[in-house]
Length: 153
Image: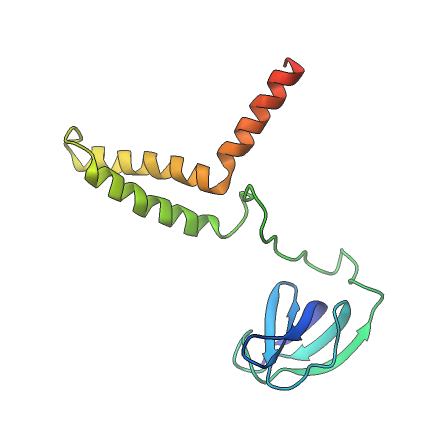
């Protein structure tokens, strides 16, 4: 049994006809109405089934005047930001996808890469460029270059 303590980011009905709340970026579900609102400070037992549970029981809920103090509460994960920050966990997924596409590209390339090491190095080089585009890193570099050109630095 895991005890969860935090501020409700979102509360409402979920797509399965149940009820959900989001606390610090994690969703908790219940078949029954959850008696708390966005901004309420909650403390509850999430049950033994993990963060997607049907046994959510709110122990206490109350308006704590908004969010808890920043020193005691971890920040909510960043979602939907672009360019994607370097500390974002979805970068590993983007890299896996870029590498898979790069291997497909290398497989279609005409002969010229003779050793496995050459093939692997080219696939990684292409994957790196694809992931830089996908994460928005190239956009950030282009923006910085444009700013530098305007300021003359």
